[in-house]
Length: 177
Image (cartoon, rainbow, N blue to C red):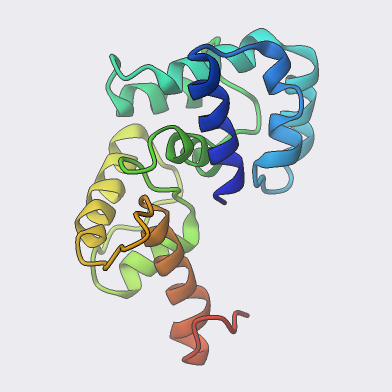
């Protein structure tokens, strides 16, 4: 999950702007995408670079509250919406842009939070407000980790994912079903 977000972070830092040519292979090679949305995303990337650029610029714009940015890119009528992109891909990008502020959110992370008793809320349709709710819990959990390598919130994502998919079932952090 970390290679794609870091690649985007490097693109933005390098030029402080987003060049369309930088985005040509970005979604194909760097981001983890879930089926069946790959074809929708790839089609938009190939034919509508302006939409992709709007999407990235909006997510990178800290003058707009994060919940508003997320809601805007999820909105089907928005010029920043990319068909097929959901909260998982959106938060991969946010985690790359702001690794200490935002967690990569997907279903196994939410299930990990519920399983550990850190929340009793499990929703499949994530809005900006719901994302903030989960992100705030993860930021509090982040404070509990020894982090000598200065990882961002990805350490919490990895912990929750591996706890839910592996440790909870097998008692081993790396044996996942």
